[in-house]
Image (cartoon, rainbow, N blue to C red):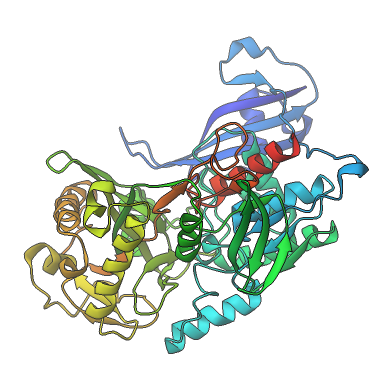
Length: 531
């Protein structure tokens, strides 16, 4: 018999293996279990009525014999699995070679889907391959010499490659498992298939990306690195070619745009051609850093040192009714570091990053406040006004940090009280290019600062000493999502104004993070293959 056990709670200190626990729950001998698979594992850290931390499982168990499923609502037959299969094209259609612009998650999975269908996509990535990109990033972190085309934002794997490698999916789409299984087949740890908050980590993600690239090449795809699509040519409202690095022309009537949220020059090019776009809301803020042990203790209580528990995270929200804004934590990186994430000279941008082990001892997270079109009205009020809004405050942060890529840093206490005196922090800021004590209010919109201050006081009531006076804030975080959206048809994923253009992923304004971007790329490719 093969069944699923739901809501199986296991005490943190239970030393039995899962087979023993499942057998006891089913009231059968453990030797009768022939196979056991973890479908989901979550941590219940709520501590109430003297009950300690528990792991909650969904398990699939295969065993000899039969039991009455009706006796327990947490026992059920294995539901039919939804299997995603790539469309296979007839040989006569294989002369089509679609172009993919950008090799982040959206472009990567669009290319993989097309390649597995029998097409041989051509991919242009403005940044370097993962090894040369990593070298460029390390050079920037150590010398301040920025490569504007190959950095934390641009290059093989996209911006998510230099983050925590989170694989959070806020959807029940059947493609979630397909993406996770693809990552595992490419070298990601198998635990991402069942953990509630899976992550790969920057270090492991680099190898995973290489392996997916190699599969695409093995299937006939071709990837050009350091190759920016600087222009497109249209005829009769339909694309017919891409110009690479302002020189070489590639003919194509199908182009998938997975350019990423920092491709500001691409947005300008598309706007020049009249491709339908709109400005959209996003969020800006700062990075906050605590000792990881502090977060572990806050979330896990007396069990915070238990080796079975991972580095703890948190998610905080605040609704500012007075100003009509929301504030929230974002891209929380347990055991990670703050990174320099700019892609343009004379600007400061921060992000967070963790390796798979999450063992740096420092927890960091963005603390963000929403901004929308009304905030951009003094920056042109047009489609690209959000871009100029970002650039303005990134430049202020650059100047505030000393105009040498040092980041402006301020303690929470000073930020709340309008000073910039504190120089000793609970955690020394991990931003790699150094920092300068400064007033972050000078590089944040006034309304954002005001909301963030109220949010910090509110969150301090949720996690005691979260907003302690000597906790460090590092500015500025602005690249949380795309500042504009490339409009597309809901049914066929094509641009509503220019045929043959498929805007995909986070840079097109239709995703947020690795998983949703990958799924978006797959769906766009699927829709093209049905034409």
